[in-house]
Length: 589
Image: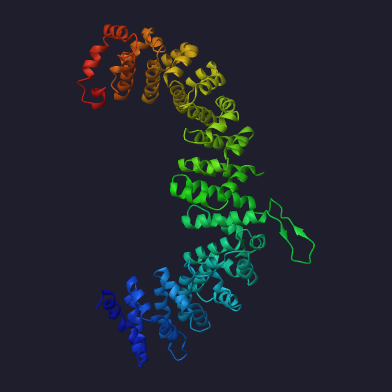
C-alpha cells in the first residue's frame, strides 16, 4: 500500500462516522473531524478527497439535523476553506455558497454566525467569483437585516462586502440596499474588528463613486458626521491599520466629491459640489498629516503609502490647494516620503514632483517654505534623478536667497540644499554656487551664531573643494578668503565637530596640486595644524594628520621641499610619537 493510501485510509473513519444512523454519533464524529483538521492542511485535503464535503453540506441543509449538528458542520466547512486555494475550489464545486446562504434564513444566531464565518473565508479567497454574492437578489437585503444581530454578523458581513464590492455595479447594488446607513453606526462599535471592517467597507463603497461620497458626508452617527468620525480615526492614538484605512476613506471621499455627479436619466441638472465643501479641507489636512507621521521613520510604510492608488497625484494636487493648512500638510507628507532613497529614484521622478515643489518655493508663507526647502534638500541628493532638472530651473539663485533669510530654519535649509547640490557636482555648478552666494555672504554664514548653519556651510565648502582640478580652480579665485575663514574658525571658540570639519577642508585643499601652496606659504595655518596634531581629541588629531599626509605625498612635485619644511617645524617628531599611540587609527595613519 502506498503512503498516500495509508494516510487516506487513516482519515476514512472520520468520513464513515458521518453516515452513522445514530445522530449523536454523527455529531460527535463532526466534532472530532473539526479537531482533526485544525491547522492540518494534509488532513483537510484527505477529507475532501474522501467526499466529506457533500456529506457535511447534506447534514447542514437537513431540517431533521439538530441546530448543534448544523452549526458544527458549518464550522468544519469553514476550517476546510482556510486551507489551500484548491480546497476552496473543491468547496465551490460542491455548491457550498447557495447552501450557506440558505442557512442564513435559520432563526438560530449561532448557526447564522457559523455560516457567515464560512462564507467570509470563502469570499476572501482570490479563486471565488464575487458575483456569486449577487446571483440571488434576496441575499443582499437579508445580509443588511442580519447586521443588527451581533458583533460577529457585523464583522463577517462587512468583510464579505469589502471583498465582493469590485466596481460601480456592485457599489450601486449595495448602496441601493442601504449599505451606507446600515454600516455607518458600526464605525462607533465597541468592537475594534467591527469598526475596522466597517471602515474597509466604506473605502471600497466610496472608491471613485461621487454618489456614495455625497451621501457619506451628510450621514451622522450619534450627532457626528461621518467625515468627523474619519478624522477621529486618523489620530495617532489609533492603531496604524485604522489610521491608514481612515486616511484612504478620507482621500477617496474628498476626491470623489470634487468630481461632477450626474443626475438620474430624465433630469437635466448636473451637480458640481463646491471644492470647499464642509469638512473637506479638514479631512485632507488630517490625512496628509497622518501619512507624514506614519512614513517619517519607516521605509515599509512609506512604500505602502506611495503604492496607494493615485496617492502621488493627490499629494501633488495638495501642493496647490487654496487652503494654507492643506498645502502645509501636503508638503509635510511629501517631505516624509522623500526620505526614501527608492522613492526618490522612482515615484518622485515619475510624477515630476520637483516642479510643483519649486512653484511652492517661489511664493509661500515661511511655515510652508521651511518644509518645502527641507524636501528640496532630499531631492538634491546625488542619487536623485530630480537633481539635474531642479538645477536647470534656477534653484541656485532661490537657495542662495534663502541663506539670507532672518528665519533660522530657512538659512539652514538653504545652505543644506546647496551642500547637497555641490556634492560630486561639475565645476560649473560649483562656480555658480560661489558666484550666487558671494564672498560676503559666505563669511556671514561662517560667522553665524547657529552651529547648524556653520556646520552646513563648512559641509558646502568641503563639497566644493573636492577633486583636484576643482580645488585648484576655486582656490585660485577664492583662496585668500577661504584661508582667512579657516583661520578664524580654528582660532574661535567652536566645538570639536566644527573644528574637525574645518581641518577636513584644509586636508582637501592640501590635496590640490597648486592649492596646497596656500597652506605651505602660510606659517600661521601650519602652526595650527601642528597644534591640532597634539590635541587631546583623537578626531582633531586624525583630521590634522590628513592635512600633513596630503602635503607630503611622495609622488607629487615639490614633496621633498615640503617634507623638509615640515621636518624643520618638528612635525616628524610628533608623527613619531603618534606612531606609538594606543589608538589604532592614529597609529596606522
